[in-house]
Image (cartoon, rainbow, N blue to C red; front, side, top):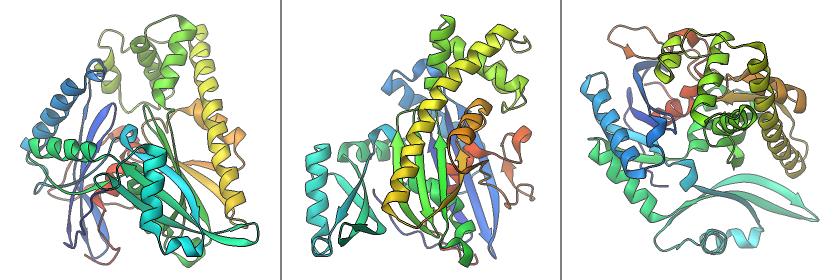
Length: 386
């Protein structure tokens, strides 16, 4: 990924998280290690335009310009992340002798596995740690790659929105960075934390030990799979299935706000679900949740086998789907670890003078969906006093 070191203290760059359903922008300011949210805002993306790449791009650019026009954010420096569907991730192992030729080895791997051109496309890696393979100790690496055209197109979109890109990141790295500051204690250095970001189309699983990422997995499972399952079970359109799922979350007190439900279906915001429909929705979500739990379980198994002796005790859920109670129940039952909704803004100042924050007031205690934006705004900060 493209990256520049950000050495300025105090005011952080804008963290721009362009998801499938929302454009979220957040900017932090850090003084004496106290982190405050200076500005935050989001715009919902009309699901009808997600099938048209050009129309979606124009909408995103317009949404960013509208947010900037409100004057809440300072400066135009931005850190954003590449779309999950454009990012290639894999793990590989190299011997000590191969480490000396790491660039050549990774270039060959990217070319063979992803049909990328090492001379023009972006190929980066993280050293995850040492693993025992038979009688040999090898180095586990996590490879991140994407094509050059994706990066050029992404930068062009940001510049069209009057932003100045100072770094391009990935969802897994931004996700981990949003919680890294809480893993610096001595007792956390040997503990493994797992962060599971569940979005509309993709789920990202990140294992971290201390301040280092040691395993990443990305899977094409998310909220849209829940909606498709509900639509199939009830014989309805996906858009209606999404609305029904939102209504069920509202009844359970888990929706962002009543305004979000009204935004999806202005004519049906106050109508309650009947028992049969509620059960059908729960069953459909449960089936997909079982599939997702199985994939995460495989990640846990791979990690414990690869990094022997490293225990995983807890998994933190983030993303817009982290509030799905049926999913949480399935994960708690299927995975042999504690499941907890993450709080990426825990300990942050959210109410200072001069701040302009459009967060979801009904969920001020959690705000799981802001984790990636937080990590993007923190990029380049070394944890020292501002």
